[in-house]
Image (cartoon, rainbow, N blue to C red; front, side, top):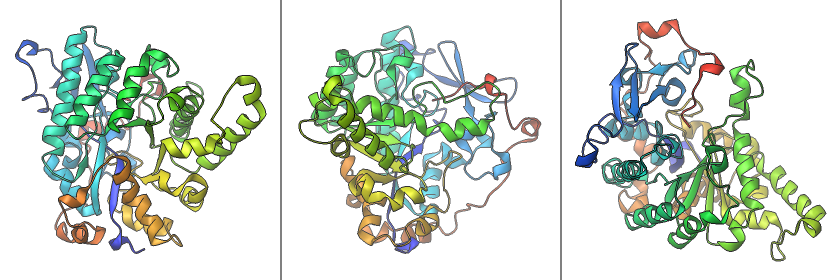
Length: 424
């Protein structure tokens, strides 16, 4: 399939939250305590919440920068491409790249909202989570109908409240909730604990996908304090492999057969080996470990419950039928450093060489639409939703690389690993 004929729906992009997001969503009793943006003495725009300061880390918003300017230094909003945080500019950037629709993970609260969950005043924390979710649905997504798959933050500290929020969001048309790779590392019950059952039940009942992003456990794969940054970046997908194993061998899939899970930004090339390893482990050990998949292989169960995602994964695409063609979706990862923006379709055209049009359509948009109960064509006719059509209407939009770093930033493009506070 030619690049211009593709229809692209990304299941993993990122929102750099604008400083005004809570202006209309702060209850009067919490004035002065909701998250707010301040500019520090160094010139960074940072979020503050209950004594915690959260910078916008550079790698989270490098779209449009030359690669030599990538880094993990804090940034201000004027040092980012406006599409990182401005809705109108985001849609223009999507059009220019030929991207029809996008699902956006959070930034400053962490991918699973762990910043809010750590707040000692749990009523404040709950109201912040709900306000964040309402802004996402009612302003960000509603501001561009058919262009965003809505996603909610979870209530990590209370499974019953988490279940109630899932159901509340489902009533608003939200069928994706982000979650952590490992709640145990954040101080909560493990995925195997029955206390999570109300949450699992709500997800299954409402058809809401549990979208788990790599790095959301608060732990990164760091082999040693003096290891190069490249080691951590290379090993990031290993966290996703771990949560997949955790859930596969848990009681969750057996007791809540309607649950669906997306493994976000973990790639897909490793999946065939993982499935083979699941099946061999089951064959060799289930008689003494007590595992029982009801006469099916673990690999078959995996394909019922897991959506896997990739940015550019030629090996994974070659092995697509070993993974499961209905279990693969595409992601852009805008505006992060792994993103293929602004030319994703051109890169995919090469990756999809020899792949049937039907398989391309499943991977690029049909699987995402089905898993997330999302239909962008109710807002934009299919013939106007192709890469070529979208790029044509954004022909005047500037997507050229530019230097976003101000003079004060050229003093620092990297930070010692030990001083980095991950935002996930």
